[in-house]
Amino acid sequence: MNNKTIYLIGVIGVILFVSSCFIGGLLIDNYSITSQYISETYAVDTEYGLWLRILGYIPSGVLFTLFCFFGIKYFPSSRLIKMGFLGVGIFYGIGTIIVSIFPCDSGCSPEYINPSISQVIHNLSALVIYTFVPISIVITGIGLRKFLNYEVLSFTSVILGILSAVFVFLLFSNLKSEFLGLYQRIIELLILIWILVCALKIKKAGNNGHN
Image 1 (tube, helix red, strand yellow):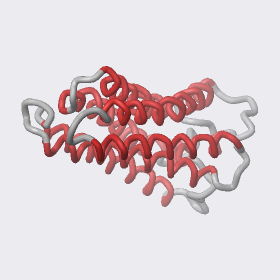
Image 2: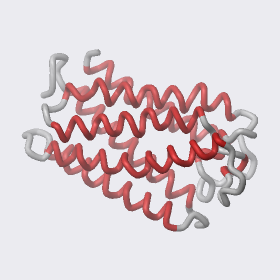
Image 3: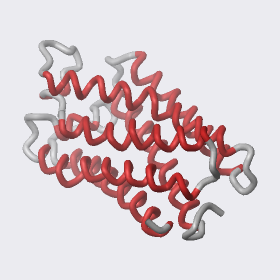
Image 4: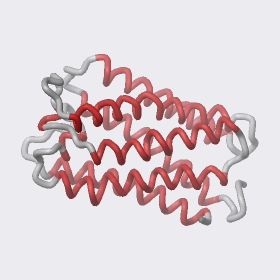
């Protein structure tokens, strides 16, 4: 794939994900983006949940995975950079697909009472995603530090990774907080910003490798 194709894959993935979050919230009466999880918009009992997953979240997960796996070649050859991109591709890209294939129960069962297998897989996958994606982004930033023309992206990656880790801590430190939905959306936003920033860097690269 050339750089412009990979750029578009990243951007379209972000647009699909954000659109799904926005539309999903509009389809549910009295839904609160501040206190309710994104997953609640496509839980097993939601009227349009299946369509949101098939047309929005699963395709976006596929695009994120492709973006990270194929985008690596447009950055300097480094073990840390490769680990970071593969980490985001696996944990965020494939992770998004898994949580979409296995939606949560009605209301996403915050008390975790008699959860279904789908709920268990969903929760464990979400835990893995929010644990390892911030780490992967920081690792990428550290790997980019020693390369010229990547200082800004390196700094941005480290900051975005650390900030997302902070909000992950806030999210899991109090599962009864009235701001769970807000914390989750900030985490997702920070990850999506990283994807967009990397996509823009790839767009500026030549078709035969990194700049």
